[in-house]
Length: 259
Length: 67
Image (cartoon, rainbow over all chains, first blue to last red; front, side, top):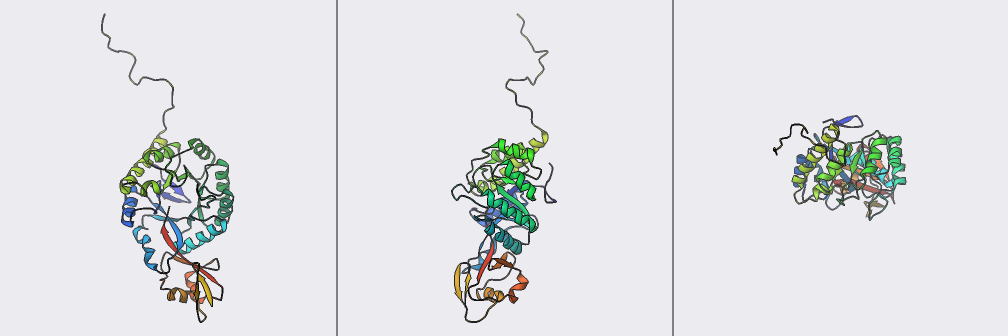
């Protein structure tokens, strides 16, 4: 299986995971291990000044094997997202950022105008920008032109588990964008991840689909296998769909009962 | 002097810099923590040299679980 390359760095795993919503940090760590992930997202939040001991999340992430991808979740303006990225860079010593600028609290769909403003500024400041965005090819091309290292169109609303709602839009993006396309959000179960990968997406990012499963560690393994299977199927090249049957066995020499 | 830290007002009786505020709040400046002063990030090695004035604001952040 080919490696995924983002901004010059090659990743064997094409599955990016979140760190939120797990029953506990031990389960999260085991799920990360089972998934083989090499990139996990973290949120950037104000410290609880009454309890500064809550910094333990990072001690459950093996940074030798896993890159941190700080996100700008909860930001509704480019300004807030940019400051969050700058704080993340200072705190975590990484230029990688998952840029999300939310436009609507019910759907958590991105605000594309603010997203473009933030992406432009962050690329200028030297960040490796991975934007969570709508599944709109025009927008994705603009993000690529700005200099984003990948585009991360949603498969369905964040946390919805509805799967890949519009595979045709993803195909358009894959056809017209040259940076990696990573489906971010909406994956509910293994087949959703496989569908995204079979389409030719370069990776899948998920949080709730794994963390919210009854057995997150087992689901992490299922997602790993689905992403790998989907990618292999894409690389292998599937057969064309046909309306009618075509026999797999020779038509000649069929045994016939006399008479 | 009043400084807003993570959205809450804190009273300080004498001039103070950012490193001293962190010390006062018992926040160890370790990996995973960063500070913005009036919406600008302050590098760790500049905190002891950055004096605060009345009305300033600080955001002290860390990485937490998220997707």
